Amino acid sequence: MGSIMIVRFSSFLVVCAALAFVIACGQDPTPVVEGNDDNGMNVGQNNDSEATRGDGQSCGDDSDCFSGVCLQGDDWPGGHCTTINCDDDADCHGDDAFCMTNPEGNDFCARPCDTDGSGQCRDGYTCQDAPADPGGWCRPGEEDDPDPDPTPSNNDNNDSNNDNNDSNNGSNGDNGVNDFEIECQSSPGQQVSFDFEVSDDADSYMVVPISEGLITPLNITTPGGETINFQGQNSFQAAGAQMFGVINPTVVPAAPQFDYQFETGTNTYTLENDASEICWYVIESQDPVTTIDLNVYLVGVPGVSPDDAENDINVQNMLDETEDILAQANVEVGEVRFPEVPASAEDNYSIIRSEQDVSELIAYSEDPGDTADELVSANVFITEQFSFSGGGGALGISLGIPGAAGLHGTGISGVAMTGEYLGTAGGGNKLTAVILAHELGHFLGLFHTTEQTGTSMSPLYDVPECDNMSNPTACPDWGNLMFPSADTNNDELHPDQSFVIGVNPLTK
Ligand SMILES: [Zn+2]
View 1 (cartoon, helix red, strand yellow):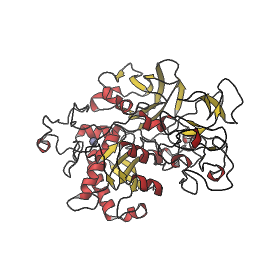
View 2 (tube, helix red, strand yellow; view 1 turned 180 degrees about the vertical axis):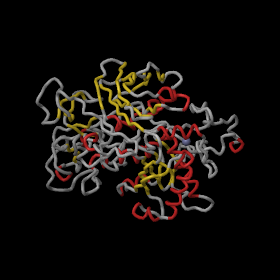
View 3 (cartoon, rainbow, N blue to C red; view 1 turned 120 degrees about the vertical axis):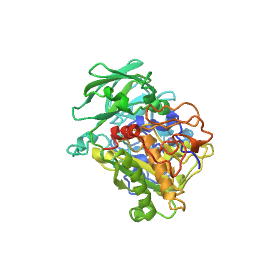
View 4 (cartoon, rainbow, N blue to C red; view 1 turned 90 degrees about the horizontal axis):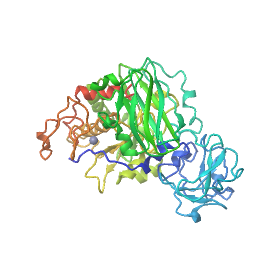
């Protein structure tokens, strides 16, 4: 049986997490044009003879643009025609547009401008330095607000990008999830600190710093004077920044022995930041933990479509098995949605061949709703097959340990895994459940009990480690869900692991 692996991603895959105006993480522009009737399957030249708008110009819908792509929503005032994945200026449509190098994502066409001048950009746009080209580009944002706030998602239906907080009022219910919003402040020096509030109702929280540049988490100081040292005993909590560069989902307390690090009131997060602004959001969690909601994307899994997944005996059996595993942590599977990816994405990503495939597929995740309760749900992409050329038999990948709760529509918004064992004889549904629960375990903050190579980063005391991975079934941690190799019998959770699952706000 191949191993379940987590794979390190370079930061270019996750710019979507950092930028509000981001171009799609995937190769298709779908994540930003979602909401159009044509499902966003509009890469390339528009054959509509009524198109009149060049790249960088305003638009009402895709048919207005020569390129066939009209970026819309609050992030793109008045609409913005563009050509995604351009190679050079000749690929751009209309006069005067240029192919802008995006060092952290897909290149795209924009209008050039002179950063020394003014009034060259239309309303809602301002001239900013292009990230990796000479000169400037007309970027969304006013002069006094040069950096639009990053938001939890950029791909919802054009009306809720910047108002999660507004639209979530009244959605608290009794599920322990608070409303959350993105905040930002300027970051003039290399080192920056920001304050965040933890309410008296909370029992744990996730704070997620996000930047357009690389970040290095240093510490959190609590109101009582404790220091959570990410360069010292809490270094395992810098895994997000190590993997993705620009984001670091941080749960407090991270393990039972760090219970004292959780304090309500004003906490201060200090980090190094290679950008002029730092943004963050906080999601609180309350005891007792009861449920996790799942958005299960079935991508080319033979014999089952998203439409009939609710009635599919194998899918339901697999989810029941997943629930049995999570029940060890007193978590039940709550609402399960089966959203669909566009047909083009299914064509491209049914067979996952690279880390980049994973990230591009996960970028198709969408906000499951406008409320905080709906947003705090985990995206699981189950594909026809994982066929990594260099993946060493990876069966699944989690984008983060832990992942960023509440963040949809980015290249790190969930987990992806193979569905090739679903419905197969000899416990295929159980094995699929083990893979799903294992990847969810990572996304909730669990490390492997033992790493295949090197030292485990797991901070948990009550989970044994293996001295001799050449004989895995003899290992003391064989049988644990977070053993790095999948097996139908590797489904156990220890109490410390249950603690980690419970304090993550994704379990609510
Ligand atoms: Zn793993």
